Image 1 (cartoon, rainbow, N blue to C red):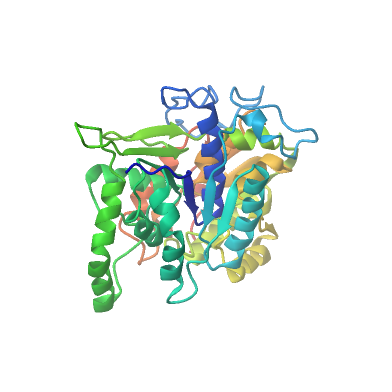
Image 2: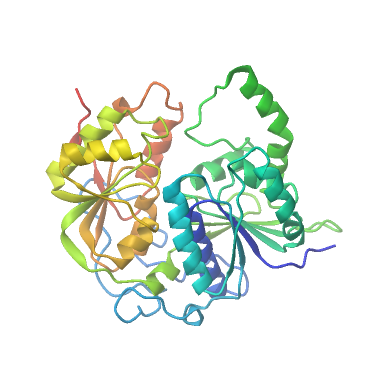
Length: 417
């Protein structure tokens, strides 16, 4: 029997929820024949390859982008959902992590989603041994009935567990950041889904858990493989909705996320004279050495006259305190994803980031505002001894494939010692 329930979305982070709202907006404006949504992509970004050289190539100032609806009066409030071509309500299930910053941002994003007319369900799936099983039992009926399922993190073991119940004809993956690049590459090669910064370990117990989980992981890989209809066999459509520079493979559909919903709802921002730095959780994930990161931020602050540091939601309070004391930067802990914070403003005329998601998303969100987005390379010497063997190549790829950004060599922020 073909599932006939509503569209069901599962999100575990604020960025995932933002991108579900962007997908809903794009779905309402998508061509009837299902072609990739490119009309709303700013012309200077559409089809562009990586910028070359190290000169200024920031987001150009000018008229509002082609896909943007008029901004709300006052530059920061929402406009009615109907004005953005929304295509009906979606049931969004929030599976919150345990850290307070993520939960706080998720609650703010959930409020925005409800304002758009969507049903939001807050479902605890962590925090206890039985919590995942209880959540799975509570969601099973909706998962089986859904005609379309949207997920934000294909690497999530809990999402993969839910996928064993999915009967939907259509599966959509929205960005959870640069991990989408690795997801596309791994599914193209038929590999098991493993986060790029993850390293082996865990001893015998870890290997036993991997073996026990293998059937679930294998099922998830099959669900993420698009299949064309052949005879009596029904089609399984897989769509990736992304701002990342990736190429679809097989029967997969690729749709561009140009942050049209964000541009329609917020801004344009008021620009300050200073430079803003964007933090990263590369230290917390064990990829970059803390002392090297501190020295890099100190150098970027001095060279570019930065005054504010937008912290990643996973950065530790101890690290942020050390950064503030060493640089004099104002530490800002955003209560919403940075794309919304920057679009609402005020924001610096230059935004400097290390290789991360925002070097791909901010040029879309801030097109036409006059803001320059710059990316500072990660020097291989900054990597820790425990960093994944793939870390160096992956981070370089994030930088090299970024569109319409200014390149800052790692030498501009030398490592400690």
